[in-house]
Image 1 (cartoon, rainbow, N blue to C red):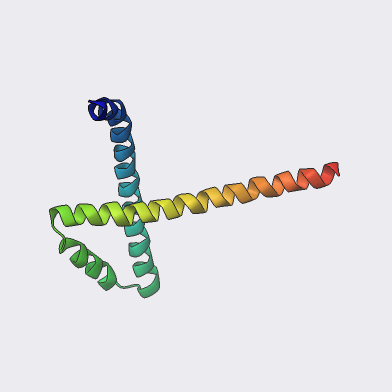
Image 2 (image 1 turned 30 degrees about the horizontal axis):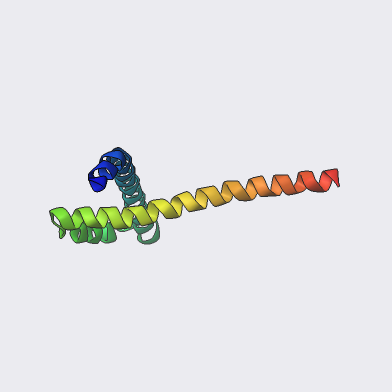
Length: 104
């Protein structure tokens, strides 16, 4: 009885978190693909590495592709988020440190 009550209370929150995670993973996977294609074109100037990436991705079917997008996309998205946040936090910390030195 308590399990069902707890499940009913937590289900909307967990659904929202899962949907956000899937969206974040999809955006992260898009960033990964953009980086891979950009590096292939800029470094080699040849589309062969892009063709190999497409061939590799096309070898996945259904659920395997979904797992790849979820895991790889989440990792890339979290890495990008960490880099952006660390840049802003460094800027905030340095400006706070400058203000402390001005006051002192």
